[in-house]
Image (tube, rainbow, N blue to C red; front, side):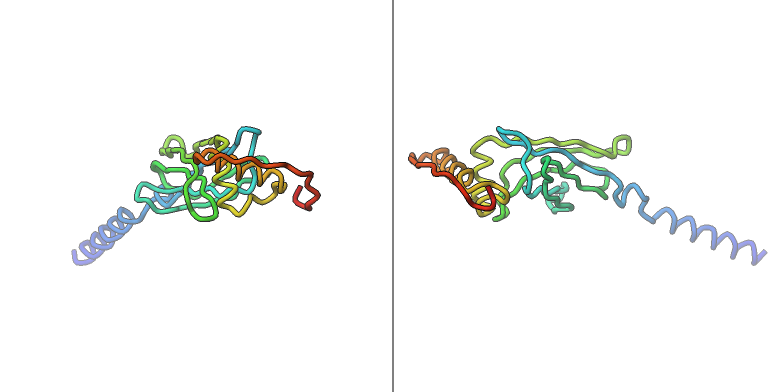
Length: 161
């Protein structure tokens, strides 16, 4: 009889441990992906943060040449997708939800001209953009902020052109 109680105790302990262990799904097996675009199409080299309901950044990606990003290993839940500049300021947001039935979500975001300018200026001018593009974006941000500006555009021979 004593062996039966010991065996039952071990089974109960094992069941309690299994019941308290997080499931594989709860640990994170979902993904959010998408494309970040602007007025002229996809945008490369932008930082995308995925933020959980508690306000913590749980994943970060840099957009590819085709504007794509992907963050995986996410638990089921609702997430805010943020495009941020180099200073950490949020330029544009979207929302994605992962459920047990849908562990993949697509969140495509499109930046307006002024949002694109804020992202490029905040990032120190935007990697991969020509100097002319940087100046035009900086001017667009200034004009959008209510300050009128006039610029002259000169041909650019920089290596980032």
